[in-house]
Image (cartoon, rainbow, N blue to C red):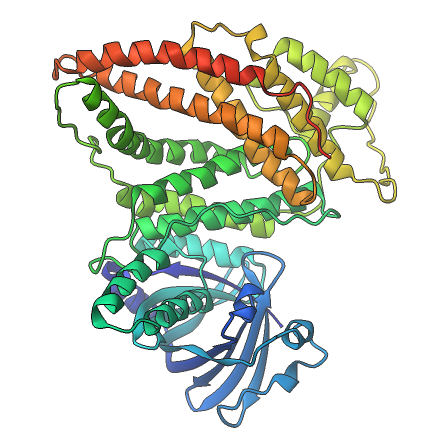
Length: 568
């Protein structure tokens, strides 16, 4: 069977309210004690499979879960058991059979969960939802991780019902999106327990324990995309968006201290950095797929810029105080004290802000509910696209606004036709259904065309821009960064392509432009403090001279970027 559920973390301050909300209507309570199994090498976890035996009240249930079609869906196989005996023969002839037959080592008990569940069902306009509030612990050897989460599972109806009620609860109780399953957290906890268990002395054990705390809540970095070459553009965009969302929410969870509030502080500047990388990847992907795939609604895309800017304000100051200021001090700048978060909004505050969490939830909703078919193809053939690119390069039209989607282009064409023929007979527009040629790598071709266009815009940037304007350098830096993120998508579609030479030169340019941006940001900061900190004038002079040198380095790095991308 297929299971669709949304899970939100319940902060300690909201637990009593959530419990009261469930008890206001008829609800039930059940004790759930589960044992999770895997090999010593985590073979199941690596395949994103979880197997458990769970005592539900007085009944044992054996459950296997596998990934489903989207982030909300899982394939779930349940079997009643007379006792706590794991029977793998039950999976013969199921989708799990192949993965289980490949196991190189025997299964063993890895971790356990001890949960008290308070639950009830609720009908909405679009479906029936089971709401369950889980509290308890995940346990691996001597390690325990608290659990406090509310799950919204679809019983019947549309998945829209999950988001409809989830959004209300998130706003009312200030809940936090957590995409990690209990099995994911348990697997990571079991790894930590195994690492600690290998140590001999108490002193070493304590040191390892501290390092495992940092590893468990380490910043979640970007992972390679996995795109099926047969996917539509929209399916590919959903896939890459899901990866970005996981990166963003994992780092936001650490910053919000969802597991650790009041115990140990794990959120660090690197979490902010990785979170922002995830958001920038999203921005690049939306630009890359504009006109090719369905995009999230405009409000969702606009809000990303707002949240990115809020996190960026804290990140830019952290970077400057940690990297630029020491260089200035070594150069002779008088010592000065600055607050790193002058507006009072810390990364912790922003990460748990309901407005940011609602944005994450709407983005998750888009990955689940968006249609997988593409809008009308915006690019018909290579020759036509080449002509379009040449016109766009000359006009630099896309610098001011996003390209219209295919649907918008069709709507505009229809509006123009209707206006022209208002006084005469209306001529309807019919878009024919044109089958795709068999075996044609349509998505690959469309992406290559767009990447080629972006590369030309980078190489020809100074034909239309003024080098005396620092913003022109910033714009070019953004284009280079966007290109690198877009190439990751292409590599996800074609993992065996050979882009290393091009990427290396692009990365070298990005490093120089990034350093230039850091110094420019520092110059703006110190220029604003010259009245209150006279020593800031030293920084202004030093940074101004440094920027001129960096501009020349950036210009030189740009000359090494090839005029044409070679994909093989």
